[in-house]
Length: 428
Image 1 (tube, one colour):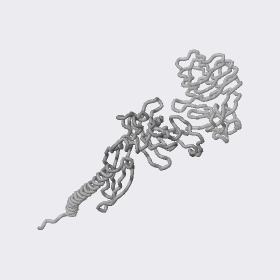
Image 2 (cartoon, one colour):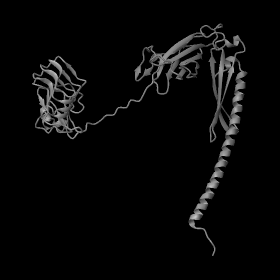
Image 3 (cartoon, helix red, strand yellow):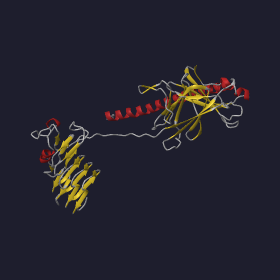
Image 4 (spheres, helix red, strand yellow):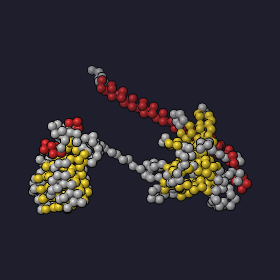
């Protein structure tokens, strides 16, 4: 009996053969890529060397930044030449250069790049010096020195500094002379050079022109500070100093939270105690009405206005579900923005043997009894009294009698008989 292959064996065999052929094809592609890159790189290197030799044979004033393109072996090459004047220290730096010629030599960078499937670039650097002092002085130039520091006056390492001629659009590159300090040797020009200073994750500082529009406003006279300055002037053989400050920035995330409770009750001066209090349009008129119905887990928002009443808390909250009374001074919930004042009665809030109660943001004044906020009884505990203004009351601002675990924080208490009166308090 002749043995045959199963379908699974056939599929496995095909899969193995496919892997082998894909590996061979990948190796072939890689070989072509390496060959193409090597060929293109040799051509680019030849073009870069040719450009360097051309620059060496030019007159010193003619060695300038250029950008050209050429085609070689059906590949288009972009040739970018960046020329940077350097003010050396041998003959003195501007404005003390011995012959008033500050472009002592030129630093040249030639970049040849190409695109396509096997794109890349080649970069060569060189130094070109003048043949004589006379030739050096044929290149008029001055120095723009830019320093960058932070708010503490510490030099910023490796900032990004852009200097641009506002008339020609040409950008210039600086020479690092110290941490945070760069020198730009530029052609002399009046009110010409725009400077922009920044760094990743830092603020931006820059120069402005007279009449420039910024953020929809026309600048009549640019200020002169480390953040914003007038555009720069560079004089022949002279030195212009500019200092900019930038600071590290961070992401500031603000999360807004919706008030969440078992029930949210609203109190407004335009409300009615016959309402259910469950919406701003059906708000209660008095805080006491809300205090009489609020149960564990409920929040009471009170809108702006003066409430001439005394509020006696009727129910306790729990550790997981306290009862909170909040003065809505911003009008976020009730729609009524302004101070929430409780005034003129025996006390503002009376918490008698009730626990897990929070009182936030009220102004309580001119009460006539024992205290503006009176907490009493050994069952009264876990009370928070925060961000209230309590003043001009005949009794104490806040009085705690025989109660425990009371938080009193960030309140303004003044012009009362006593500020905070504690009697038999276990902890607060």
